Length: 154
Image (tube, rainbow, N blue to C red; front, side):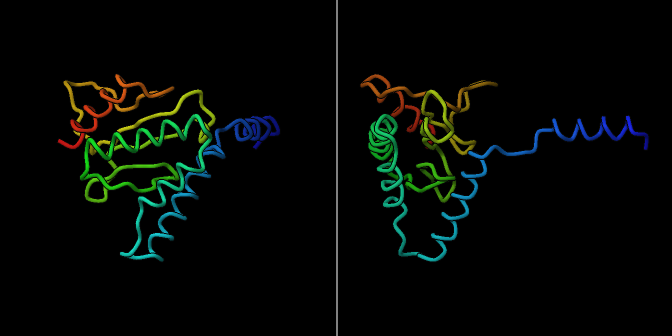
């Protein structure tokens, strides 16, 4: 291999995206801890306690939204089980996450996110939203979220 080829290859390698961001790696480590913790606690575990503790740790602006969102989701779909998922509050049916809350601080974004997985029944034509930015919760947004959650589990 020529010197020029070696230099070009070294430059390409140095500029190559190396995979996950530090925040993404941190989320994966949190998920591994969640799985280990659940395995240790066994059937006696109350994952909702973990969710409420995670919410309590959040910055105030995220915490206010997460607490209200938790209440709205539990009231709208009492059959969903609260659990941690990659360090985020999530709500599952039969062990599979239907929706989740991602705080703005978690990935240093300007808004929090309410997300729905492919387990959610939100299908509408060939394209529909699955992530919603949240800056605050109002009576109108809470009603819309309640309707979305009810549709997601229908």
